[in-house]
Length: 303
Image 1 (cartoon, rainbow, N blue to C red):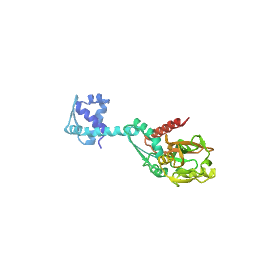
Image 2: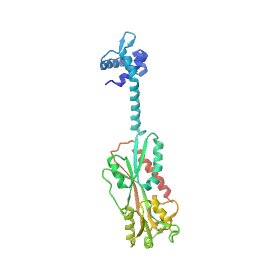
Image 3: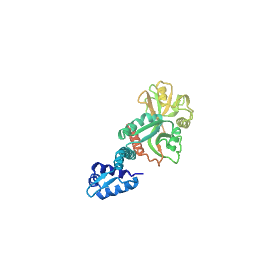
Image 4: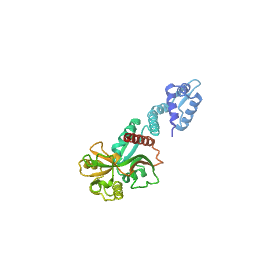
């Protein structure tokens, strides 16, 4: 295979008609240029220059090579630039996944920061519950996934993945604004024993957490509506159809009142999972942007 460095030197020699001038233009010595042309002649199997004491004249083979290799050298330069951009994280593809409430509250700020920092990169976002996205991170089809875990329903993540906590969301009790207890700051769960409850599906960590809190308060919550969409849960509460336990990210800006459950320090943890071996140069940027977005949320939550 022909050496692209030798081909680049050949083009300059043909253009200038001089080894010495080509050497000056390329930053080589004249002897280095001469040696490169000897090696190229061996590779081609034919003389490339007619040499005299004061000048060189390109042969037909040299002129053909010089003409044809321009596009090849240009393509190699393009590939080199693209590879350097990929290594530096200025280009490439980043694939993330998240769950619904984080997608609404955490990801928009983080994604905007990533795109602003790396405008030539492709950034993709998928959505799913933790168990739905874990496989993608393990298999490498996802670079990272934002997931959650409830303190009252502990879980263990695969040992192959690194988990980093981004946010601890306090669990709150959401009441209609017209509720008799809506004006307080906290509520004893026992006072809500006879209420109609709105909750996520029975097989979810949120539902199991509510059940354990209610059991500790001495009652079994009467759940009449179930939805895994916290936007639906909040709207049903706002319409006076029941009360609910909601993590902080899911609480809407208006329409419901949220109170602390008295005697409880219960949280839903928001984490990001990724493979430690993942060498995508965009991944550290993504992790930093996610952390910054969550830090901004914590600041806004602080009274």
